[in-house]
Length: 182
Image (cartoon, rainbow, N blue to C red; front, side, top):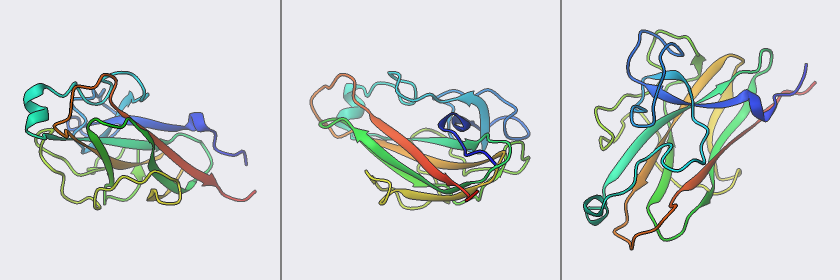
């Protein structure tokens, strides 16, 4: 039994369309829950999850939400004790918080909803844990065990803070876990 590699822990956008998970391409703006999409979220590129905060959104302290899936693509092993956390966040801009979706890990092609679903990016999701901003693995949010070929969702909340304009605002989200003993 080989260990799960970082390249086998995939982050993917969510999608509200389709009849099952992992059957429809997704986008950042469409990541509003329900199913895992076929589209990877690489993270790190400018505006690859949220668009720029406009002056009006900043003044109003607008809150936006996105749903992202963790997909264990390893063919044999469970990703155990999976944790999601903020490994970095740009100071002085919008704030980022995360929450776990309450739907348990499921097969990536499941026809049942795999995460809560929201109507618009400013609609707060229900059926999720409390939002927080853990910055270490130890304080991170538990996604539990994600078996081989399965997925589990988490939510990201961005809150504009009515701050001065800031280029390259953002955060780095990390996912980690263990491979069972050999």
